[in-house]
Figure: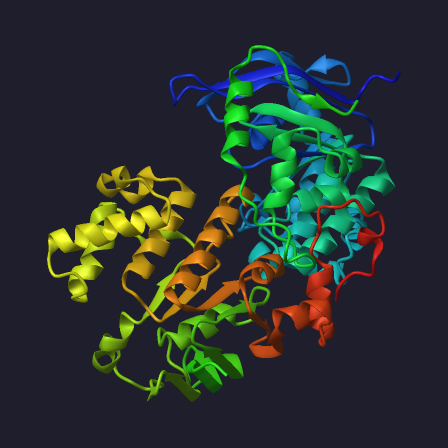
Length: 294
Length: 270
């Protein structure tokens, strides 16, 4: 078996603000090259915390207490800062939830899109500009010359998110972390962005960690999925298996809670209290009880 | 046919300086709502759905058209003339943290309007009504002494619903009230709202960007696009066989939780 690109094992973290309350409980997951894995769960599930730990941007109030995050075999948590910085942005890139705050409002798109190419790939301004133009074309931006000259506020939310995707893929990373990249977008734009991320991922053979609260989005873009609750992995496996044959009562309940336009009789079933009770009992267990589809 | 409660005809809303032309965000919208009926207003950002809701409540002025509430034409009533109607038309907001006074206890937030509108004779009467309503919306009485920031998002939204329902309104406007909630909480809040509107015979306008949510709670749906009504009809028929290509596009863009390799390959929506 090939070594996975990313392997998280036994990751635990606590909140320093809330008297050491656990935020991640013994989380393990792995990602092969070119795989798209969904990290899904409701608020407080820990999905964003995992992404932040991986990117090295955990807030000071969260402390990792155990576990490792191995990228190509090396633990990101313990490697020297210098090595970590060389990997971040280059081999691992981020597509953020809100491109509005991720882009610098005072700089033109050209400057922001070519920084990495010039500083980390050693391209000169002319080559970097050409690469930026082809990246914009690749994310289906119609008038790339005009967009390069634009400031972020002159572009729509969907356009800004396309630019973030172009930027994330610009240095040919091996892993892209997409943190709820479509949550703020209209459904028609969301579909375009999902298609774009999948298309770029396939064209470049990139692995993607896709953080989302939406099981529908998982179904459409993820090969595999890890469902979390209270910082613990509840169920994991190939997306089709988890969604069609969920093994955990919570997974089944979450699927039944979402309304769906095609089946007005289904959906809107609140998660039963018995399921929350079961989850609480499992969170208290010292050993892993996750349902794994292998 | 049930009695008409709210009716808008050809309403237009223009923001900004009208002498300079302004920006017209509603271009002649018709809408009618019967007593006890729940209508869904759906659209993408910029479609005018929120402005339409605010115009119905007379929170923004219309530049053309007519709005009727019950037997009364309310299009140009001034604040004083609107005041007696305000209790009868209530609103539940998207972000209860922004709409509930952060310095007031839940007791004040729920009790003050009851006393202001003279629905409660005194503080003891108000307290009794509040406790009954809390029970109805599934909140424990201990929240009465708390402030909004001490509650969860789902609890705050229940307070918003309780505040509106306590005033015994005839019409409630709910603007994106579940879009910030987790799916398990969302199901609880929507079920609560459905039950309340049935029990109290409320008429409701339910604004949402989410067609699945609209399908679950509404009798009828209005699809908005660029300040116009794109399609309108009973949920059963619109969802089964949308007449507008735009409605079809919106439906097809919703990712259902089923693996389907063709979905992402379909032609991109324009």
